[in-house]
Length: 167
View (spheres, rainbow, N blue to C red):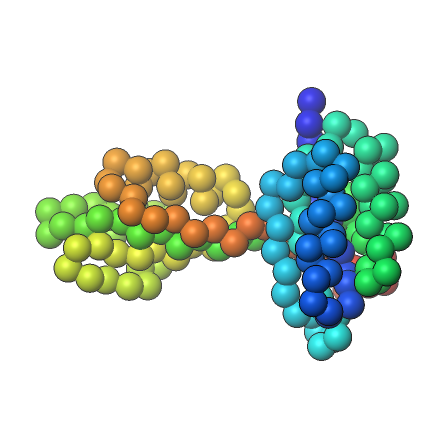
């Protein structure tokens, strides 16, 4: 059975590095569940958060080893192996009429989400949380017409004072 693993890949902040990392993973026939990249506390370092599916730890170690060989890769950390915090952001555009708006607002409040945009015909909902929470609000709001969904993919940090670059 496939298991999902969260990797933090610290790389030099250069054009094309994300393509090299994602290409290597896909060439090894691993499925990328989500991928996101952004600046870190160091301006010349980018953190790529990748959720990959693998059959076991041995396969995961092979991917980590191959990633570490890439020239621009500084460090590869299996965040899943540590105590960590994972979050994802979703924006959901939902059709909202005067009859359905109050029901949609109730669902938003239950999930502690926010309405970040309102028009006469729709609302945009923002929610940050784990994958299960985001899946649950999508399910709850699916009785209304979902016009569009945008998800960031998962990001994670290890708990405690030690950053990924020192793991």
